[in-house]
Length: 266
Image 1 (cartoon, rainbow, N blue to C red):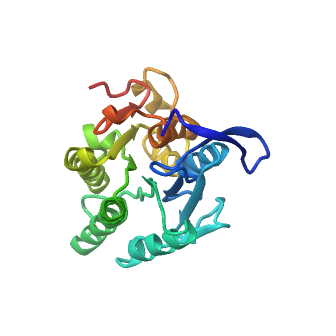
Image 2 (image 1 turned 90 degrees about the vertical axis):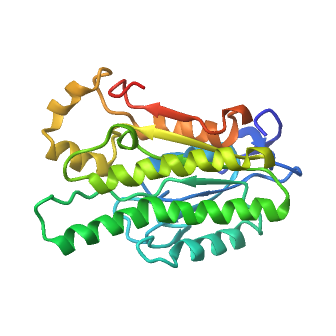
């Protein structure tokens, strides 16, 4: 996939080498969840510059994002991932080659809140950040198996999946740790069928979601924990995700790529 293609024009009118579908010369079709803002929007923009067919997704409630042309699906609703997959397949003429699991929720819940509020926050975060990604990954793997073709999944996880998070974010760290386990299991189980899995673990990234967290934890003072001296830009994370989606060699399946300014080094 990475070394083959034809020349074509992207939406911006620029000429570029168009990635060829994973098996039969079609244009590559990619579903990106959470593509209306932040990292997801940067991923979508960079993929479109590579002349692939991108199907975007949003909750339908984005503020300051790009909901136009994206499929609305609220992952807090259990049937939503299935509805998204079916509509994405329809828009992609029945063939999706790459899934990017990027959608996520980052909301703190104090440890001393009521039992029901704490449990509701836990279950909502896991449903949006982990269960929906698992559902879509399952649909994708079965889709590729039924067609007898290769495919790729890129999971946007988090540094929190390795080192944990704040006392108000147990659920977020657990969900991202679960995503990493999901990614590794898929990679080991299906590599022999040409189905590959990659994960990216950003640290703090300059998005509205991270901005609220940084402010709550002391703002600029928190940067002292990052040797690079700054948080990542969404475009930097997108660079990695797009490379995994289109260019990474198959031997890298199962790999997790950290992008945290050396704030956590494994």
